Length: 66
Image (cartoon, rainbow, N blue to C red; front, side, top):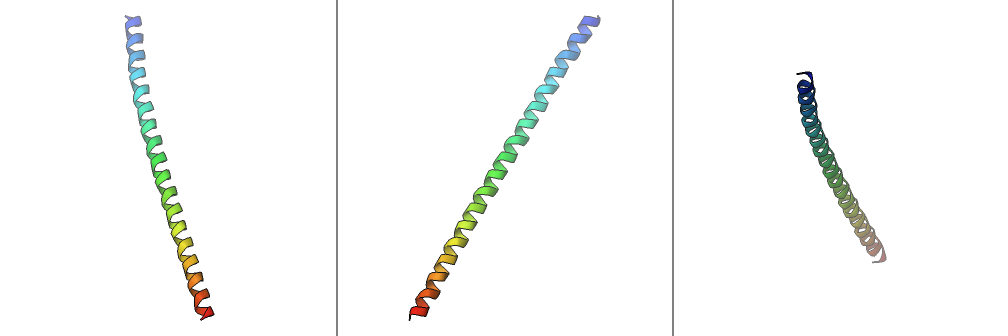
């Protein structure tokens, strides 16, 4: 009887571990995806600011020549 109970507890523990592992994986992948999206958005915004600054500087430079 004790062996059966111990085996049952062990099997239930393995199932719980699998669920925890899957939950951890889901959290990890979501964190990775969100971080990647933030990084790409930041990169794109920085690039656009740089282009706008460059164009504004060129415009001012051209106006000063005239």
